[in-house]
Length: 161
Length: 303
Image 1: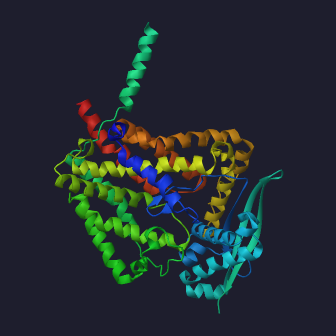
Image 2: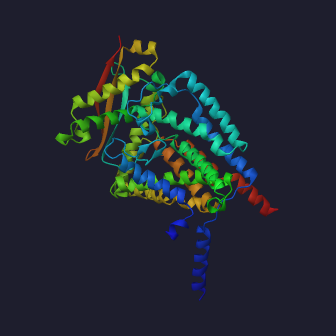
Image 3: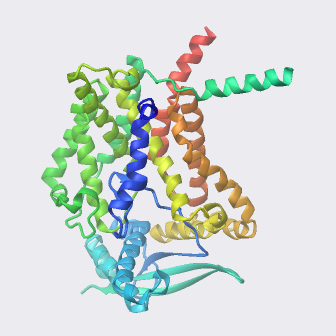
């Protein structure tokens, strides 16, 4: 205990203990167990695998839409939201022991449509009306024998009247 | 003989370098550091909140409905109170009072934003440092009431800055620990796959605004996959830099070393990934590098 009393950076180590161990343990079972704003265990780029993915938005003719100018939102946030929804779908299917990357297309579409429905109210009304609706595309990037390959899937669509 | 003496010299030099020396700030230096911290925090009170739901509650949003912060009238005047409070902080009003609104309004606004399903980390470090400085202010009041000296013999103003600095360094240490835990210790081995994230970030940046010129360094991911050792060496430097960031709080020299190294690390990551940790870099510059103090110290030596 005497050793602890003489530690000059007690506040720092207390914060490390709280954010790296206590919060992730207390919130275990949640999709983002290490996140309790402003505390975070900073999980980004903590693991790497031979595949990853991103999302982007198109119109109903599959032409890409500059979503940041249309809605003020950035794609990285849409990707994180889509990921959160996928985790929810995965939890719902946990009895089947499905991996997130193996989720069926229906589950992906449900997740994608939640994200698009959330996005629509932030869009410029006139521009969105002109587009008629939005689609969400998921692009999976893999590294294999043939090098780096990309695969695109339609994972959601919303139409506006 | 001389070898042994030399070794002793190195050990003594290393001990001096690592020695803990509480960083005491003079009045002018405190003014500059508070100005720097307030400048970074000011950025977080721009714009307006437009979230009317919290579908994926984060932090205190599990218990508190924060959507009232998106009400234009409430949001507008609270942001002004926060800005005035930051000015009060700069001119020396104790943090326990002057940081109360900026800290908790900032936490509230960004908790609401992070309760939409996507967790952003850009401003997290700013509010963590503000919270740390405010807690130091509370600590100073508690110790004052009990007529006890503050930790490490610091004055209130220096303690507020010291805890903000410790919070900044703690974030890096935690980030390194998470990398080790989440990857089951395989972070070095798997870091070659970082190349796939480069493609992901470049493509997302492009598709977000459909602006040409974003997709630079297109050759790099394929090259990284073919040269995994190069990736492992680059990222091999990053992990210990984060893990040992706490050393930057031991004295001014270590603060300078870790501050400059971490800024260089952020700049190189920005070049590779298009991810900009601008507030981390600003806080490192203010709280760890503290360049004005070094200019004055070197100026005094030269004279």
